[in-house]
Structure formats: structure tokens, C-alpha cells
Image (cartoon, rainbow, N blue to C red; front, side):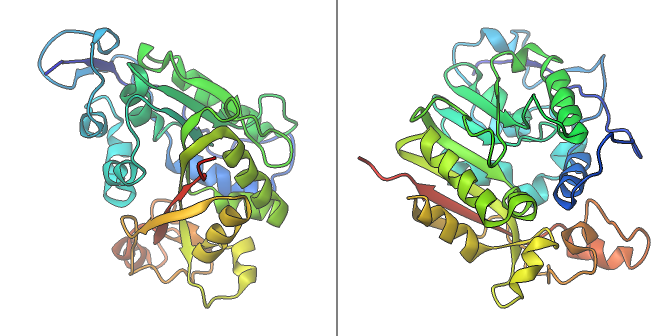
Length: 311
């Protein structure tokens, strides 16, 4: 087996209580919470081997297996601790992500999945990280993209990551048209709906469709709102109805291939005063009923696989 060395990921910590030049929308506040949950800790002297040996990762002839990438000692321990709820190996296997593919991740946040996808795709694939626009009036978006850029500079393992921009309604060129084998988005649909409503969702799925090659796969994960709940809750709760995700995808031209309960949590009732952020890891209500929410765990999530039809 080839052995490989990965320098641990570094990124600037999200400063608690930071002041922003512009007032935040509800969607931006939700995104800030999401990025804070994914914050990657700085450890400039931390360098670990995945396996025995001394060959640097960038010199290996073969890419790691998906499980090796997930199990890499270089991943931040706090990020690894969330595997119980995010199930990255099972999720990426469900989306059939292969190391030779061109993969686009939409809004990678602080780099939780980048820690896995960048080494997995380094040797034989291509990884596009479609982050917030570089030219933006939103201080939050600008600062978040800047933190991600610093994170990418922390190790040679990220040198092949190609950063593009995505914002429904303005920035849609996430990758060259028709080039992607996979487009992946994790817990973002609710953000686009909270920010731009139906138009935001339509713009998003149209952009994904344009980037994918015929036969390419779109993988979607998001917090699930029960179908019998009031539609208005989608605008405030951080949850999204699974049927809505399917509707917007199919309207854009996608075919639903399969759904999975990999990321399901039947203990999540999705009826909290502070929405999905009531649950771990945000725990917005602090000590109030904390053990109850810890016992529930992270949110119930749908996992959907769509295909762009062959021409």
C-alpha cells in the first residue's frame, strides 16, 4: 500500500462576536452558525502520518481509498467527531464519488468536506470548491471566503483545489459547462430558500445542471422538515422539505435516482423554537434543556441522488 503524509489543516478561527460592516440577513446568520460549527482549529506544528512510511502524499502514484481519506489522521479531531452524524464515507459512496472524477462542492464553508475530498481527488481527479463570491458587498461572505483561502494555503495537499464562486442570482459558473461528474451540496438548500425564496432554488439547480456532464450526478443533503408541517417553516427553521428538493431538481431537468436514510435521525422532531440550531452542535438555547437536545443528536437529514439525463 502506498503511504502518504498529510499536513494537518489550518485555518483562522471564527472570531466570536465579530462586528460586520453590513447587517446580516437571516440567511447570513444561518450560514455563520453553520461555518462556526465547522471551524477548523489552528495547529501550525501538527504533522501526522496516515500510515507508516515517509513519502509525502503529493508524490504517491495512486490516490487513497475513500475510507483512507476519511480516516486520515490529518483531519481535525473536532471534524472527525462529527462523522457519527455526517457519515462522510457512506454519503460519498452513495453518490459514487470516484478519485478520477471532476467534483464540485457547493459552499464548502470552512472546509469540512475539503479535508476529505482534496486528498481523495489530488492524484487523479479535479476538485472545484464553489465558495461565496470574491467580489461581494457582504462582509460575512467576504471574510468567510478569505478564511477558506487561508485554510487552503495551510498545506500542499490543497494546492490543486480550484476555487470558484456561487451565489444564486449572480454567480453561477461553478465549473466549466458540462465538465463535472459530480456536484455535491451539503445542508445548503435551506440557506438559498431563506435568502432568495423559489428564485434562489431555481437558480441553484440550474447552475448545477449546467456544470454537470450528461449522466453526471447531483448529490444533495439537507435538514429534513416533515412533509405535514407548515410551508412557512422552511423560511425560518433551517429545515427543508424533501419533496421541495425533489421538485426543484426535477424542474431543472434532473431525474431522481435514489434516496437514502444514511443521514436520518428519527429522534429529531424538527419543532424547536430556535429551529435546527437548537440541536448540537450549535445548541443555541445554551444550558436550557441541554441534555434533551444532546440526547437527540444532530438533525434528521435527507440524502438524495439525482442524474442529469444522457443526451
